[in-house]
Length: 473
Image (cartoon, rainbow, N blue to C red; front, side):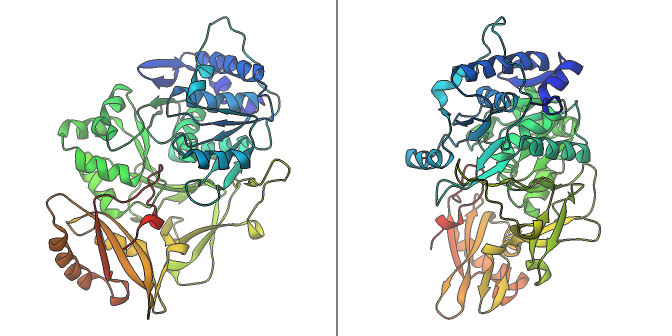
């Protein structure tokens, strides 16, 4: 690895005793982490995993997974993170596509233990592979799609992001996202370490761990975090202690939100409860971090923030709210993984990547996402944005969560259907009557849902996104 990309070594020289990782109450300094990574790289070499090799890792959230990531960067190894909760047949399918030189699971966690102080460490590699990591974006349905990124692209992206939003060595980032997918590495491990800050590893966020969410945050003295809209909504419902709100206002400077659109009702509810504004962002596995709000910004409600320097978004013809966004960025993926024998397949016509999202960039440079092109509902020839309908439904006091999509109609082609999780104290029939009148006053006839389904919970994947294919009437 070139010294320019040796993130841990860079800070180990400049701030050797500064905390880099905080896990289970243990504080690991940059210089200690540097030595630890070197010893882990030596163990990988002993198992035949050297520069240019592909290493698949299916570990639960924790320090061993972080060490696997950092060791791969150190040793010039291409890491292939795997969701440890995938069904066995899906894991086999993914491995058959990636064909790694080794596959490590939870039983292999000791490979990334610290070891004896005198154990020799491997030197940093002088070169990095063309592909530093392969992120598979699916695998529970359909064929997994491997997104290839170079190490330099990943580091350059978070370096630009950190500079724009003001993350530096004082950053202490809470980590509660799944480590096997992009945001669980790029946003919450690489970003704070490139900044010279610390990663505070807390239990992965689940409905159960949410009850104790703020305890590790306070103990780790965090000042930054990445959450999803679902997490914000859940925390808003669970916590009413004024002491937590006071602590948040005194300590948290950057609360980023990503991976899914942030409804205004969820944003405003969280800000009112905890007294800190969520900073919405935008990115994709294929193009990395693309836009974000800065602390202290006011106005531009409903936007996903300003574009990173060097990033351009173009729109194709169509109604303003329904134009597809195409992105030109220096952080574009190398392509989709095909096989070890073939180069990655890059699907970016004219140098621009089609995001599949609809929206626009306003005159001040703020990005507004209005929905997904593939989710567009066409009712009797009229285009309906599901996200716009969801935003209205979330304003009703009975609605806790909602998902809107089109379902087949024999005459209109499609009609608008809504799946709703009610807040406590509301019964389905009571809510249905109120919602019918509510949408009549706020939506045009073509956008108003005509089919309703009330659920205990929306089906979500590990990253918190709603699995719309699982919603049926």
